[in-house]
Amino acid sequence: MKKTLFFIGLAWPPTTFITRKLKALAESNSFNVLVGISSPEKKTNKQFKIQSIELVKLSHPEDPILMRASSLLTGAIKTFLKSPSLFLKISGLAYKKSRCVKHYLLLFTNYLIISSTQFDLAHFEWVTASFDYIELLELLKTPFTISARGSLFTIRPITDGDSYTNKLIKAVKKARKIHCVSKAMENTVKKLVPEAKTEVIYNGVDIALFNGNAELNNNFLRIIFIGNLNWKKSVDTAIFIFHNFLNLGGRGVLHIVGNGPEKERLYFSLKDLNLESHVVYHGYLKEKEVALLLKNMDILILTSLAEGLANVILEAMASYTVPVVTNVFGNPEVITHKKDGFLFAPLQINEPVKYLLTLYHNPVLLCEMKKKGREKIENMFTFSIMKKHHVKFFMESLS
Image 1 (cartoon, rainbow, N blue to C red):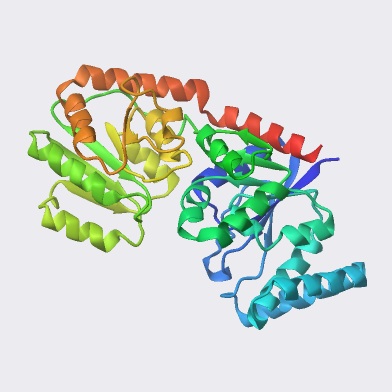
Image 2 (cartoon, rainbow, N blue to C red):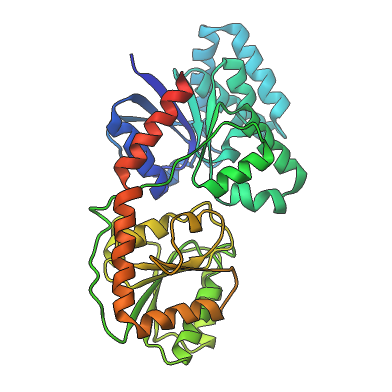
């Protein structure tokens, strides 16, 4: 009989890399997969479906009050009929964990929903989602795993202080196993908890969707930035790099894909630097739209201050687009500097400008690097390779 995995705390539809992971597990036919949706009802797209994956709607403060009341009542009846003592323990736990009456009702409802759901292993793609549920899972005697990615492990322990770090350490210690998106992330986890049971599994790319060719547009570079427009992605740095590239004789266009709080600032920067006619802003694009755009690019510029391992690097290399990116955390694990891409320190301007000019003046080198990048993805970072490792990860976690 197949075991059941319960992914708790995902928005629906999930982000691209989580969607790929869920599809990989569903296609493997090795598990039953449930997803506990934590997004508000009005922002949840239930028309987005992944074959054989079942959705479980968790309560959210922005849900309609009647919907929340119905979820609470249904969960209470199911749990009480199953075990009155468990019902009382869950109520006490929610009271202990809650900050106010509203928070108590939210936690109590979700504890009841989870406790009345049949599953063998819980998984948290975002470690912060586990903070409210660790004690509940211990009460239910159900193990859990987590994924270690991005700023939740690299930046927030610094910005949010000891309270956050202590919760993070607790989650890592209690988890049966931790999926790390890069070796650098694994090292970060091990610094927090040396005895943590970790496994590195790189993201995989659909190489049929993300494809292209090494065709060149001589004396003109098609450059792209993809990422959330927030301070961690440092889009201003990318703009200044492109501005200096043009001032030093380069010709090209910069495409920017993404949305976020820095959007207004982006417009001001483009205007101040007189770049409006040289930059195309696309806003948020879906995966297939990104794939179509990448097919026609030469260079990915990524200026992030922190990354577990930027998924967009893999997508770019699969699309014959050369990455020129910051050397943070897992990025150097994918790119061989000066062979299939270029690495530079965060907030640097002159160094990446030099790399852009090198590729601009050497189209043969650009073509060679495009082909080497694609070859590396085909050998190491495909969807099928990722699927095999994730199945193994969860099989071992269930044993």
